[in-house]
Length: 99
Image (cartoon, rainbow, N blue to C red):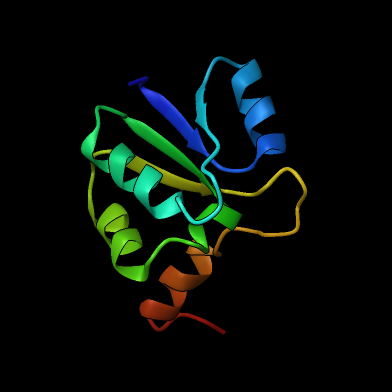
């Protein structure tokens, strides 16, 4: 498996493919299986579209967020309809610094 893997929609995948990133466009309902395979594989950096991340169980997403392998980043979709969570806002809220 490639060092960097993008999992998400076709439009976003086309852009990532242009810069040499390996992409996977999971069939509907297979997102969690594909992400699970990436977790078990040799991928170093997993780029997960925000729309695909919404379809992944909370427990699997927590495994990614607490694991250093692979590093996982939820990125916006090319369409801009689904945005990733505001990590800075989440951290501020957990630290009691949210306004």
